[in-house]
Length: 264
Image (cartoon, rainbow, N blue to C red; front, side, top):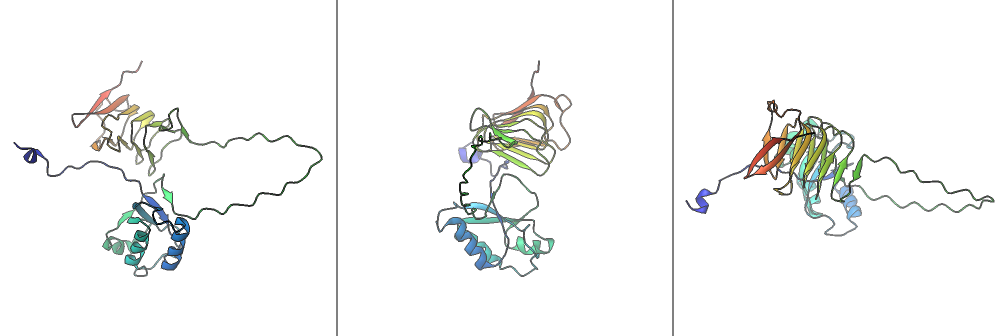
């Protein structure tokens, strides 16, 4: 059998796409064009053909059906190298015309997105005030941050629960989860995923094609696991020998190998 004959006609794999979220405060073409020019500073390659979600959550009043010139709106964003692919928080009355433009309806509020908002203007520095008594400089107290960097700058550590509808993406490295990942959440890493709490929801490791990535969990209960796009779902639950127990997922010969982890 030749190589062409052995090739599959179609394969479906799980993938992840990072998109820019454009929060629209108006649908007026002139105002949007001015805002985009302000954001990019007139730099033609400020954006690099990113996928774009048009977020309607801030639009008041809600646009009426037929009130938006969709071809012009899409063309405006494309002229700044932004490619609209979906509309988020769209009113139900607009869904038919949105789909007619080839755009999807995004209903999940995902984290880790970029917002297109103008950079804040720098505030003037306060004028120094003379004081007869020099006060000691206050000790800075850092604000608590739930997401912290591990020893490697490419490792992302999440200290708080990942809730339903949230997405966490460790670009270029591993993802370490110190709290539960709830059903309906999605955790993604270009490297491996290490879960030190119950792992539910969707877990996608090797998102950029790393076939050596793995998924580790002290309590494996994921709805879906994927390594480099090869995935498996567990709609009917995990096998009793693995459900809620320490386990790892890895890729062997284009198939997912799921085994228990010995814990001493």
